[in-house]
Image 1: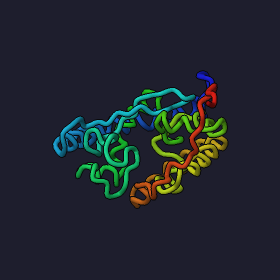
Image 2: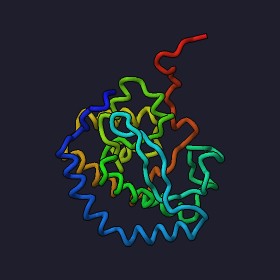
Image 3: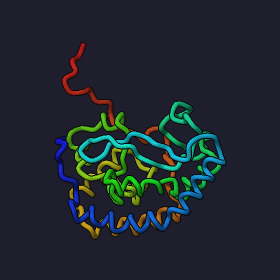
Image 4: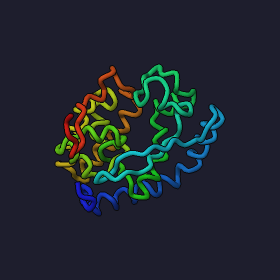
Length: 216
């Protein structure tokens, strides 16, 4: 995918993001500071969790979240997969994940242009390596804080289905669709539904050989 790929929605979508997020970030700053202090007091480590994710046109960026698990959790237990009763989740983390308040620092990701309010959720490079050419079209949109897949099943649906929904979003984007997804996101968050993956096959994309690789 070319590095110069224009993002879905163009300047209209970007202007909407900034117009909404800038006042929202200012208004929630005191609350965010209080959460940061709570996270640090609850368990040792930084208040923020930083992880490399894949963004627009395949470019990597550093996604920000409030830390909800013990330091080094990715190398423990089930790795990237997080279950409802996962012992790696901290006490503060359980509340933050249930309410999606752990995503609040991503307002900064939106402000600097790495993300959008609405779009395909960003994933890690090792998972993107499994995409075929068609699935990589989800990278035509800036990754979102929320998205179509998140209001249709969130973490309870496998990645193959999420990607199909993301492609539907990319092909049918409109400002009206973004507003609808934002409204439905409020209901999903308040209901607390589908906050965790179900089953070990949530990431169900087949392994793909890298381009140019040769068999034995």
